Length: 162
Image 1 (tube, rainbow, N blue to C red):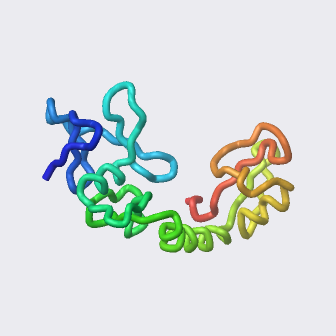
Image 2 (cartoon, rainbow, N blue to C red):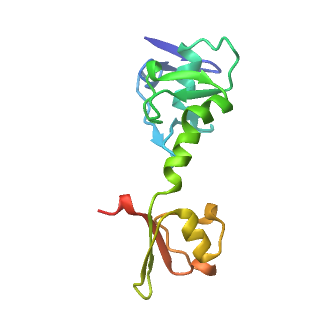
C-alpha cells in the first residue's frame, strides 16, 4: 500500500520504506548516512528526508505526540513499518543509546603511526584519548591526522581489522 507523503504531494511511501514519484512511478534511490540512517531526496532543491520518519508519519498513528521514531531492532536501515515506533529522546536513549554507549566504551583500538610504522594497542577510545592528551570525541576511525598530538596516526577498532 502506498500513501502520499505529507507536504510532498508528488511522492509516495510504502510500508517497506520505498519512496516513489507518483507521476513516473519510479522508485527513488536512497542513500545511507555515515550514522546508518537512510535518506532520500524528493526533488532537486530539497533537504534530504529520513525514510524511517516518512514511513512512521504515513502509517503509524502518533497518539502521544512523540518527536522521534525508534527502530525496534536497532537496525537503522530497516525501515519497515513493523520495525518502527514513535518515541522520544528519553525512551530512545534508554532503549538503544545507553546500552550501545556501554558496549562501545571498551572496544579495543589500534593506533598506527603512518610514518614510523609504530603500532600501539589500546583497551578503549578513552585510553587513546588519555595517551594522546585529547578529548575522546575528537578521535575518528580510519582517518590519518595531519596536525596536533595525533599527527600521522591512524586509528581503527580492532574488530574492524581483518
